[in-house]
Amino acid sequence: MSQTKAYRRILIAEDDEDDRLLLSQAFKEINFTRPIETVNNGEELLAVLRSGAPLPALILLDLNMPVKNGREALLEIRADAHLRHLPVVVMSTSSAPSEIAAIYRSGANSCITKPNSFKDLVNILQTTTTYWLDVVQLPGQF
Image (cartoon, rainbow, N blue to C red; front, side):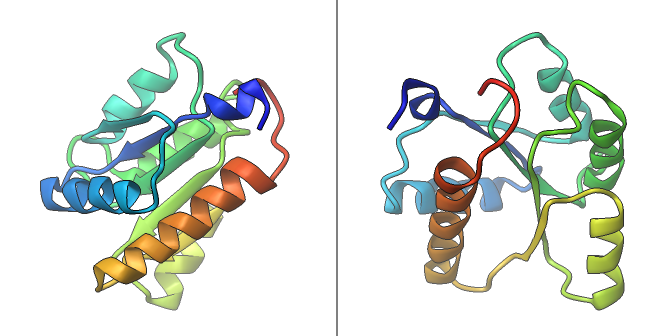
């Protein structure tokens, strides 16, 4: 693994404390050792992205958050020339085709329906992190 890949971090925007705890436990289950940062809403997400700190290699984004929701944050990310290349995976409770279509129209790279079981969450995170952090070639420095 190259040094740049070793330091790739994930930024999670999720306001629900229980969901953050489940994600944390699932990352431990897959022995994920790269840095993970969490924020509570879209406004905090954008503040981190625009802070001058190194950009994350992947954003996991909840849609239904207070202050600034995920869709609003995603639209701002896609409108910003410095951020638009970042991969954003939306994790939604909805599996409605119209909602999924709207998520992709907003600029998401992927949309995942939040699973009902911990085992499914672990499998999803394993697949997602392997794909976005180890397989895909992305522009820019991470």
